[in-house]
Amino acid sequence: MMEEILIKIRDYADNAHGNQMRKYTQERYIVHPVRVMETLRGYTGRLPLLATALLHDVLEDTPVKAPEMLGFLKGVMNDTEAEETLNLVIEMTDVFVKEAYPELNRKQRKQLERGRIALTSANAQTIKYADVIDNAIDITTHDHNFAPHYLKEVLAILKVADKGNAQLYAKAMQVVTDSLNAIKFQ
Image 1 (tube, rainbow, N blue to C red):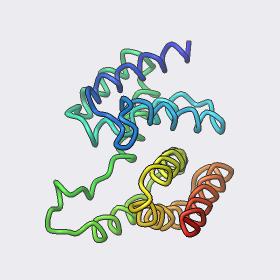
Image 2: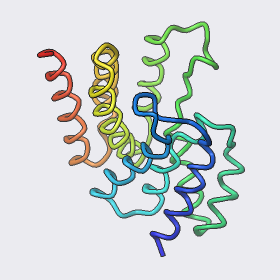
Image 3: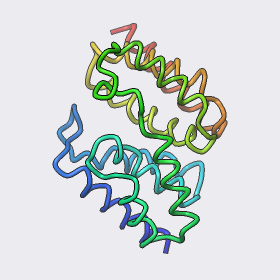
């Protein structure tokens, strides 16, 4: 039953992302949320967290709005799980983006975002760790120029977002520090 729900949610997220592709590999965007969910699945089997992993970029990167997402979720899971999922997706959605704050530079926006993430729930931070792991590996593999900058940003996030699953947190820290060390020797 849970797998059927996750397939419906994956398909919804894939449709929401439409023709978006991963920046470096030109794969359909959905490959990233699926990898985030699979990483997360090694640490939790809770449906709202796994569903959020699949949906974590939808509100930020697509025209879908929260009420529409909630309506969809209530059609595939119970109301409590649907509301928890939506709340987690909202917590995962960057607020301090360039479009909303064009007067701020990237460093200023990332500093504000880091402060916001530090205040998010343990569950949102746990999902963030899986997101960081996937993005860190992808960016380190494909963009040697941007990787040091990105990795330093997410390391700063991890230092203030430490309320989530301790094992996944340790893995995220390890991936980021290993990636930073690998770049130093290239």
